[in-house]
Length: 364
Ligand SMILES: O=P(O)(O)OC[C@H]1O[C@](O)(COP(=O)(O)O)[C@@H](O)[C@@H]1O
Ligand SMILES: [Mg+2]
Ligand SMILES: [Mg+2]
Image 1 (cartoon, rainbow, N blue to C red):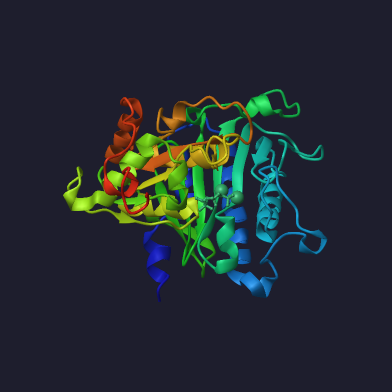
Image 2: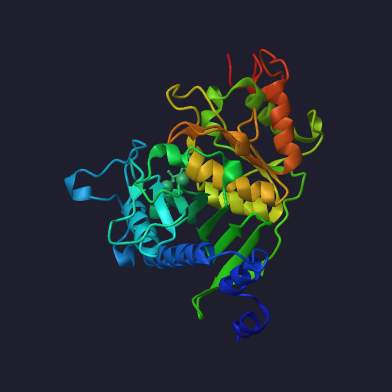
């Protein structure tokens, strides 16, 4: 029986959290209860994703009335909206939260008056990789936990303006061939696989560590004409392979679900770039600082990898707005450091490797 071993030999998420809590004898248990509520939200979203078309959850939200647009200016999918509701409903009632913020909500979410307020802030991307929902490719949920104000008053944007270094915990759920929860409570990174028979997350990937070197990179190459010189240089050098300055061949991946790319990198190394570019100068990057870059950044750093804007460590960035976008580079430490070095070095005018050279296949 496939699940017998997991029942007898593996820790459940609950057991793992209780054992972690023993490190903090004064802890109230609120934090563990919050993580378990987040885990239930993720299980509920995993079910909705798994039913797909059968569950009537595919396609755009509110399609009959022309669709709904979120604060990012993006058309919301039904599953974006549903996942957001699931996160709220599973966590707002318990008295652990001072407030929440989400990709799908313009403003901070206030805990309704009928519920007690607590000390944490929950920040989340309820469904990452939304463009993949309708094509049955892995998507996920990303979350970050911060300390909130003690006042019990309504939360405001300023309460969330905390650097990534202040995160108490971060994690994601990946709705792939198996559902996984990957979590850091500030003491390394651990991966749990959902046992569908028990409905429990079981510790299957303890103490994840990202290899420092890699031969695999992920970037949306359709944006290459908008990249800044250091990014062009880095990718050119990877593409040049064995005969180029890196003297080794690289492989490339692009899933268009950052959460799935982060997972691959946690499993076997690699580097992910969604850098700042010149495509739309009103948007300094595609991905969002508070609920994408920071939680993934914390997981990377806790697993021995690195996360950066390209210019500085992501964990040191002081946020200025709830839905702030930012250039993001993360993964194997030596590659991220190399990209940072390229940003710091005086810029060459043009890379002299073939893809972007002045005279090449892609230029007259
Ligand atoms: O469409 P692109 O440029 O490939 O961008 C894909 C990126 O957008 C995202 O889907 C953004 O997240 P959301 O789906 O939560 O908006 C990332 O997961 C992914 O890396
Ligand atoms: Mg996202
Ligand atoms: Mg999203």
